[in-house]
Length: 300
Image (cartoon, rainbow, N blue to C red; front, side, top):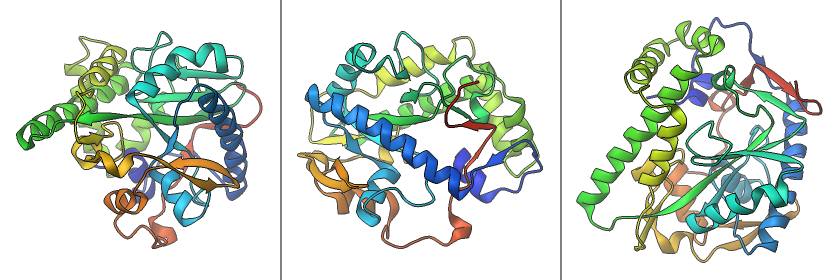
């Protein structure tokens, strides 16, 4: 099934209320994200928390020594223990400038992973149009969890984790129904995907999305083993499962002229996620960056 970002890049929609970020917008977005990263990195170093580059940020670190030029976001990892520690210290250390959502967090959750938002900015995406959660520019942070070593257990837990992930976000779509998202998806080849999401969301809406996010977050945790996974990552539970030595011990690299931690075997990690990751994709295959509203200085 297509992710929404892939829909942006591949689907022709008749929706006319979306704003596509310009090159100048993306440059300014990078400046804001770097400011956020610097603040988070300082707090994490102070509290002995290792914040690792993940996904496109990890790819950008190796291929571009910084942001992928056309990328508009930042993705980071925490080990499960560091993830829980960060939640505990967040309000005291960062609450003045930032807001956070995370499964099980007192402020609620806007998805199945942690997000840190910069106050006094606006980035309103279609999925969040009707939600009560922050609409600022944000950084995604995913937990790294231990995975089973037995193949049968991996298949079973992976299937259930991916199912819970799909259910939780489908309930979110249904619970906070977005007119803009519906218009975009119904008027494109994503129509059937949208209908499936809404149907599943309706069936499982006997519990709120926030509860489903918390259930997913608890379920993906595991006992110490030789394997780890990022169940909230782009390739889901089994797609992101790797031996622990691929991730640890982490190493330092350079990202936009500052330090960033990367996984121990970056080549293995990136090849696993992207295949030939040093190949620059043609412009037609790069993700589009669409939103309903963007403001770098003042929240609406």
